[in-house]
Amino acid sequence: MLNFEKRTGPDFGSAAPTYPDNAVPDWFRDAKLGFFVHWGLYSVPAWAVAHPEGGVPTEDSYAWHQYAEWYGNTVRIAGSPTWNRHQELYGPGRSYEDLADLWDASAFDADAFVGELVGAGARYIIPTTKHHEGFCLWDTRTTGFNAVSRGPRRDLIAEFHDATRRAGARFGVYYSGALDWHVSDFPAIESDTDLFRFRRNDDAFARYSAAQLEELIQRFSPDVLWNDIEWPDGGKGDEDHGVAALLSRYFDGHPEGVVNDRWGVPYHGYLTREYTNVDEILPEPWESTRGLGYSFGFNQAEDDSHTLSGPDLIRMLVDVVSKNGNLLINVGPAADGSIPELQRATMRELGAWLSINGAAVYGTRPWIRFGEDIGVPRRYTQSDAGVHVHVLDPRAGVVELPSELAAAGAARWQDGSAAEMTPRTDGTAVVRVPEALAGSPVAVLTVPGV
Image (cartoon, rainbow, N blue to C red; front, side):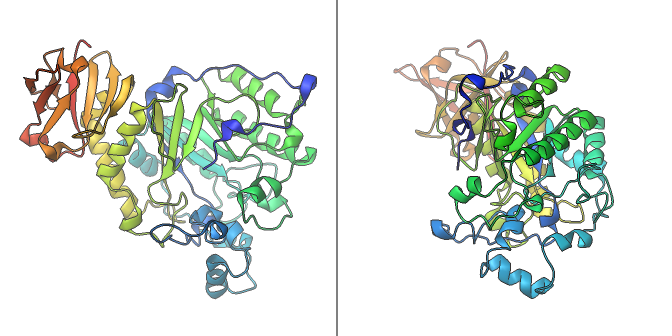
């Protein structure tokens, strides 16, 4: 996957604009868990190739794209599995954009939906306001290609926003800044090179993107601006509609706001890592993002073999947090606005675990190292209460404490029971996991005074 903070340009030299210098706010670093919601026209067909073990050849990765939200691109690659299925299901006369009139969101209850996310532990929620297909989910003045004028006939982002605020969570917006297939006339993207070649960089499109983002900021005062696939080059200079001016105005009105790194400019907020395992503590705040399956948009071709289980998701969260990151996990609703049961079950397991162990996750910071994988694997987080040892395999029955923690001489498990600690001559110690916690996905031991 691409690391977007490394992609900046063009170089304006001495004419480069001045960017804001806002740091990532503490609320974001404390939050640890957010939920993405990928919902759009792609949720109508809700289909992508579920890759076999080992994936597909690189040259087929776009024609066989496993992201259902990329349906609008893969359906234009003649002979691709998506193209073939679309012809069979909808007929050769119906385009992808025609699916807007088939989109029925009648099962969507924003308060119930957001309640599931907050119940799963979400501290911030980021729905897709416009994905690469160009279909806007809010009542925009910029285009009639939106969810109020067609399909659902509802301002879905307003509903998400209001429900999120009522639930006490932070609200953010995802926006596809430089890809909009609805207002572009390029061939289908079939490689990473095409991803940056086949997109509009002209001034008119930069103004269009800026107008849409300004609408989102003015209407919803988002705590997070999550931009994707950079920004049109025509809006990267010192223009009033340029990204530098946009971000400066945003921070002037929202000093506690935060942005990500996918703007293609020298300034970024936090780093993003998509479907990527980070193997060290990153010094900068960062965010790991992925779907519960291998797609962000709902993919009905996936089953439980493609979907994270509750224990897997819990272990992923503590791994990310131990390395100075947040986890932005995605839920992909069906077209009608319901959360598929497979996703819901995993989310609820995460929420149940966090209701007991949240103090070892929220508001924490990394310890001197993220963990150890020798012996029983564990991860470390740190708070005012001490160092939290996350035992990733409690069934082993024991866990080894390094000398820095063993020296404390006392520790308590998540259920309040005192740890049975056996010192070793090398300064480490072995701690027995209580039988009552052996079945937990991750058992948490807190070592105070470290």
